[in-house]
Image 1 (tube, rainbow, N blue to C red):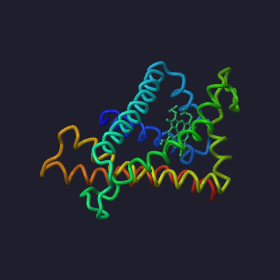
Image 2 (cartoon, rainbow, N blue to C red; image 1 turned 180 degrees about the horizontal axis):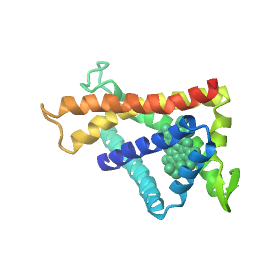
Image 3 (spheres, rainbow, N blue to C red; image 1 turned 135 degrees about the vertical axis):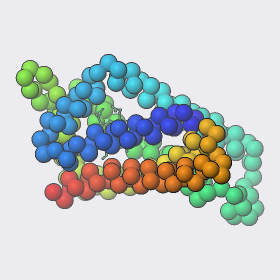
Image 4 (spheres, protein in one colour; image 1 turned 180 degrees about the vertical axis):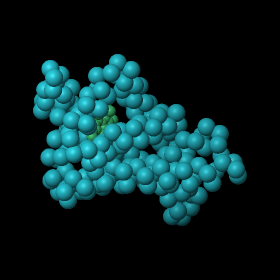
Amino acid sequence: MSLAGIFLIVFLLVHMGINLLVIIYEDPMVYNKVAHFMTSNILIKIFEIILFGGFLLHIIYALILQVQNWIARPRRYNKANYSNTSFFSKFMVHTAAIILVFLVIHMMDFYIKAKFGHAAEIHVEGVAYHDFASEILDKFKMLPFVIFYIAAIVFLGFHLIHGFQSAFKTLGMDNRKYTPVIDALALIYSIGVVAGYSIIPVIIYFS
Ligand code: HEM
């Protein structure tokens, strides 16, 4: 569960870095060429299979853990907030469900369109590139999309704060020396991810 989580933590940083190219460079082909490399390189294709495997493992383990928790404590505590767990850890299943809905919509928007041939293409020097950049620019000119993406990314941030902390603690870094460092890194990482992803729709919408 934690290894799959750490894998996803790294994926999110790489994906964010690539997507930021849309707002950094005016020429959409910069983004399209990087996206093309990411979707056609054999090593990255293998990474993609591992990524989807990681997602699946993460979800399956999470469901098993949740069911085990329910079986271990079928009745809720009589006193509200009796359990000594952090605010974000209480809502992991809820935020996960929101992220899953977001991912299904996100995949239908970009990934499935590209895989099954409905995405717009640009031909440069005999090579066909999916025009993801223009699709992103068009999408984020629509306010409902901007709001939906930012809301989902904020929930992703809530999920990541606890997810990051617990992934590293499960791997043994839970002691007086490491815990404050892990907690601080979790906060910096989560705020960075929320800010980095949210700035893309905001800048596109207002430009
Ligand atoms: C501003 C926000 C985002 C934009 C503009 C964006 C854009 C894209 C695009 C264009 C693709 C298809 C091209 C490609 O495969 O690289 C894609 C794929 C994907 N996105 Fe996003 N994305 C955003 C946020 C997210 C977030 C927050 C997540 C995770 C929670 C995510 C997860 C994925 C996954 C798993 C794929 C398919 C795997 C891959 O091909 O890399 N994306 N995204």
